[in-house]
Length: 254
Image (cartoon, rainbow, N blue to C red):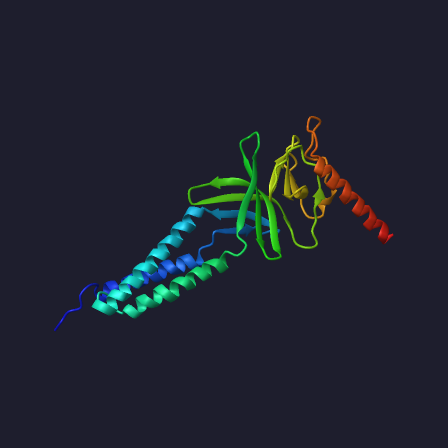
């Protein structure tokens, strides 16, 4: 009687079990997540997984799928592994399904943009989570920056959905451009700019005051300027234009 060459039944099942667990872990892996305060349900902590972890996990699953497909071929051709149909199904069905689950579980991940460092060495970051019409912006302080993950304490948050709440500000000459700008003023106020000169949230480090939705509309246009800061001319023109449009809008309601 010819014995089956290659992996025994026990080892074959063990290989399949490990592959299933690996695919399940990848499918459920979140690259970022947040927790809320129990009393107010406001955002409290954002945890951002290191990109290396996600890449390593994806590569490990891809390599596992290739090995399973090869073992399935050897199983059918030379009986190297038991139940080769299981290996084939794991490679061509379970692996893509895990990838799809991973994609769905990470719709609207937290992304990190502009950052500043205060005099005490604390790092602050403009954070954003967006998917379709659902958008949340936050200014957060880095509390832990480890090899595998970064934890950020949320200081203030605002949404970017309608109805939007923002202030037109005048930035210093030659400002940062792009999405998610963050400024630290001479008065220790963190100013978060969505894009252009559209300020959506701010935080006063001295008084620990959050300036978010609705409150942000009362922010001074000159918040980022001091007596030695020449203004960005494009912001001046944009702010005047926005003020005129607002006045016209109010006058039409009278």
